[in-house]
Image (cartoon, rainbow over the protein chains, first blue to last red):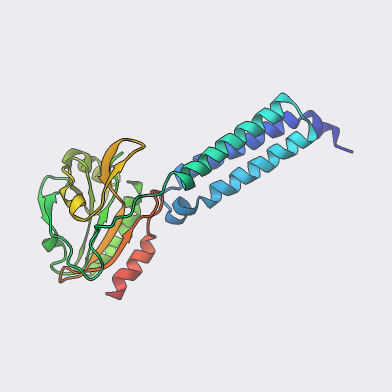
Length: 137
Length: 109
């Protein structure tokens, strides 16, 4: 026998499940600085799965516009996240990049203060790490 | 961009060894300054606005989603004689090396 109060509030469970999925998506942007979270998105995937389970439970208790609607939204948002993170992120290969063992191509370009910085000055007294990133956007 | 914040620890290890870390992007100097100030970075943020260095390192990439020319995310560890001893080029736009793993590579030199 289904608990009648759960059946009565199934709509709220559905909305709650959708909210868990949304919170999972928000969490990804907040924790993007942590490399393993950025690469694997495990906490967000766990929250998407948890939210969908709650939604599924709500639909199982009561099939209504509200429960089926929140479940569909949760599935669409969760699916879009997975597509974005795992489907559209592949980068082209850098075939022309210098290899390990080769000399690093020299450069002299301005820093944030407009002063020129040359690679030779960076590794003059110790190892240098040159990090290319995608820019201020 | 936010990944730069995590590189403070790597910068510290390099400085202890007399070396340096720099970040490079296809930004104007004014944008590099904004990034360096906003994230309070302890290392220089270089401006390769005409993408010359980025092209020379084989990292030129036209980002189709935002229609911008930029660099593939990459790390090059260079020893005192100017030779590349370790490199990392991101295979996916959401993958970056763990700063701790980079520190391990520096310690191997």
